[in-house]
Length: 192
Image (cartoon, rainbow, N blue to C red; front, side):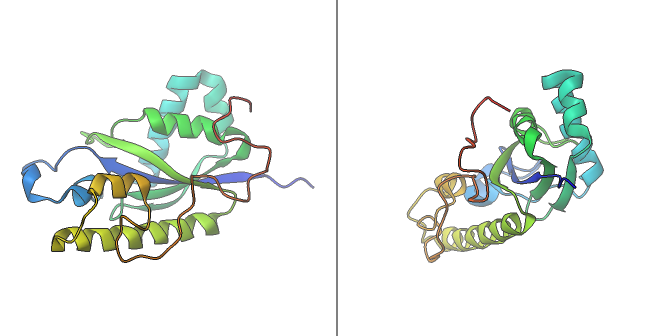
């Protein structure tokens, strides 16, 4: 019996503008980029948006390859984070589709960036990374609100390192790769 091998993608939704009706200067930068997502976003709408983007980029072949294995395992509108499950052979197609998506897939969706922050072979490691990143975000936001932040908030968001969070001593991995991936597999290679 052959086991189906999957990859789990931890994705953050990063907003590029202030919420409608709120001045940009009143919100700290770190909180501006990490806003909660509308409660209208449901896993079904997210899957529909990702599938349509895969179809637009890779046609029927890409859509058929991804369609069967794509699933939202976790969606948190409060933290603008979600976990996707996709087959190991086709996770790069979904990653590329997420890179080209520029709006939340709801009616009148706001402009955003979908950032893959972790790829793993197990959902447990992705969940641990999501919790770790949420803690770092909370600590960095507290420091910025108190005026103690010496580093820029955007750098803390993009790097996700423990120095930007100030008081955190958690170690950070060098990239979105997980040690569970095969040693010969390169994240950004073109071969399938």
